[in-house]
Length: 465
Ligand code: UDP
Image (cartoon, rainbow, N blue to C red; front, side, top):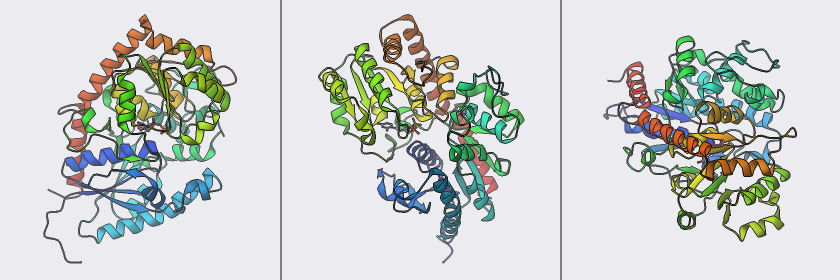
């Protein structure tokens, strides 16, 4: 290929773990980098690139690697372990091929910004003489725990009523990530989250999709004791934060088909401010039938209008007879929506959430108080912080069988939507955090400065003026 006369911009390859909650934060961060003058290519798996609903900005190129299941993971992989092994083995090989291809494209690659879940990508980046930038998409608190486990500093199984991890408040064992608390529950995920730290010391930059003010204590501890990390979130579209990026009004990638915005907003407009309960458990959590039933009864007992997202694959678990009577009242059940637009609506009074980090941060950015119903992975720890540290919500307590009963759902929803003192306190705190989140990403804010510093250091390491 002829050498290009164009000035060389730093070129990064952004590589997210193939899941709904990981692709958009990575893509959003890439958009920020492009707005600072970098070139970005987003690498998705062949299957996801072909099956998603996407509205990709023309400023970011899309390319692919293979996870070994180009026709679809669920259809082919016999287990999560088999999938992760294939993602690692085939993913490493095809990532190296992609890097070589981009190097011969006239705009050679300088750095791989990889999802912490894909620690093997750092090894590939180094073998290809590229800078390696780890981008963690869970909180610093959760990663602090996994770090201590990986280094053998937090012996497992957990013992005693309280767990002490440097940088964190004391946690009950059940407030730890589920893979740690329920050892052996999901071995493939346990290996993946703990292995994030096997080679992290070799990374050239350590970035977190959170903001400093939200996790000040643990960020300070990690920065002083582990690596000079940078917090660069939140990664919601710019329209909802600083409104500085052109054409950044929505997430670009949906694995599910969202119901049209006009249908949802017309329904929301019919309700007074702070009156509607929004319920969603994200893209992966699977509730069992009895939990669906308790939740449906609890929402009916609370008596507020509600908008409940139930993915198509889960809808058969809804208690049909009850749903008919509930739906005749003020309720809307949809398979997927534009969650940002819903949370931005004045009509929303609270968010019953599984506490996936994106949902929590989105609720914070819109000042919406939460009823936390964590299901697995990092959600338990996020829920603890929602209730006790950030004070932006209440946890719905599960019984010994792990079921959140209908009275508990009713009580927690009423606490937030009923105009009581606790609800007012949570809403006020949510509004305070909303202001902090926006300030972090605005000109001069902590994440804004960190992104600028990152870009400058990256350019200098890549020998670009
Ligand atoms: N989401 C959405 N529409 C829905 C439900 C969820 O757009 O109907 C988005 C939500 O805004 C969030 C992501 O899906 O960005 C879910 O990520 P989260 O970390 O909350 O949970 P996960 O799906 O990873 O468990």
